[in-house]
Length: 170
Image (tube, rainbow, N blue to C red; front, side, top):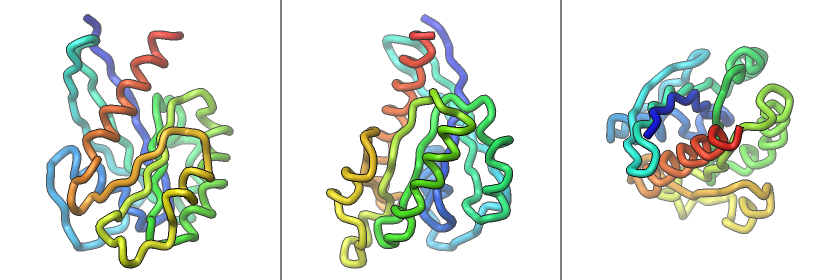
């Protein structure tokens, strides 16, 4: 068995819940208080897979404001995987996927990626349907809630498995 270390980046517009998803997974907590990420934050988490061994994730939580978008070339350099997050209650975040996919194609073209629709707990405010999400891209998609924790672990397991497979193929 081999141990793996991966740089996993979280991308998406400001306020979509990137930080909340990461903190929910790493610390199993959720806060209703919104604090904007300034630049980039880092958290780590280790996963153990019977088939491959230990996977250590270095999770980059990249701020979604315009200021930080200008530095994506630096943030995406050396990335092994990406999770792109949209807010299911804000249609604009789906429209802005073109920017995030473009940045990945430009700065990290061959890495595994997953699209996540966050805030399923706010179903009565939902503006993006499952069909809208499915029609936007052919990559794997998940719908989740950082608040309830629904599907959060599954997202990290899936992207970790994809990064391991991608590394083995190289």
